Length: 111
Length: 111
Image (cartoon, rainbow over all chains, first blue to last red; front, side):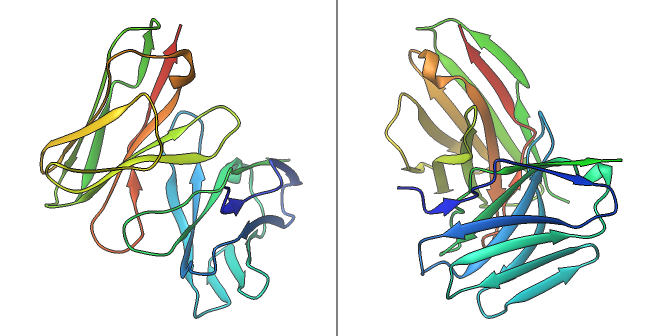
């Protein structure tokens, strides 16, 4: 029973272009959504989040969009930079004790 | 500031041998503590979480166990490792809310 799906295991984008990472979930009880970024052999680090009362949150080059009716979440990175190359996990939450992580999308930004 | 320490960074163990991974958090009290695993080709799977000393919740049935002997110490153990226990193990903590911070991880290879 996979509550969180990131259907694109990998994404390749040219530097300067927009990267769009998608996440779908099934549990309508999720009320807070986080994105984490992970480099190889390191722990994930928090990137950006959004509450279910909003449909958009922006932080510099990173914007997260939430479509509750479609149970869909997306992360936009613009402009993409080579240092953005990493694995990105979406992580919804429905209580304050634990997060449910998606399978991740590996983003590669090439020059 | 809070920091989380996890060790060892890498570990190679034979099948049937015991396991002990340790995690400690500094700079906070009464944190929520978590053990996650990232297996090859899969997302981050929550294994255990703890809201206090001696309080352990197991998310999935498995060959592993967890203990919290002190407020800021979380230990992941196994009496006999299986090949399927190989993966990248991450300790994490949170204080309030869903945002959690991860340690640097332990790469476990069971041979």
